[in-house]
Length: 228
Image (tube, rainbow, N blue to C red; front, top):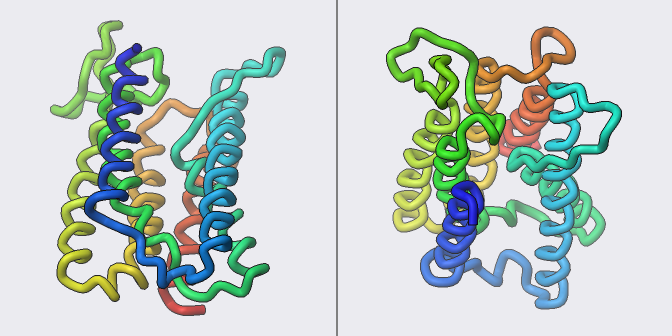
């Protein structure tokens, strides 16, 4: 098992354990059991499709491998895909309110752990930052000091995880109504900023493909947080 796969396994395992033992989903969010399972199925399908599609698009534009099909994966893509499919599902099934709160603890700690795996994988993972003289710069083995953006994201999500735990035990009702949109806003905002420190190909206005999807998620989160 490679170092990246090991950390992915740890992220999934710890996330699953948290969902089963600590942050147990409230059935009140979706009362009908059949509908609840359909909801989870739609979320998984959307996440998988989004992860592969958006991750592969970034590889296509950034590595210029137009002659060969190279599949990638992206946690941002997974979130975008899941949000789109779930919102469509909720609209069709007339489900009101936030239903994603109990995904947040697992997602947050999973991203924090997974990004450490990205960092330890080094240059092969293609998630490193651009060259820098910043004191936190790191040499991934080729003699170039780069931003360890993987660790920037890991640190940010670790801090947010502490906040998530605090909110869950302080006010469960607030947690269920707001924490998912807060997660989307924080994740997409910090990811948008870190993308400026990555060597990905830009599309328009100096922004890469991930940043455009981040802007979409930011707009989504703000809209729902305002209750529009």
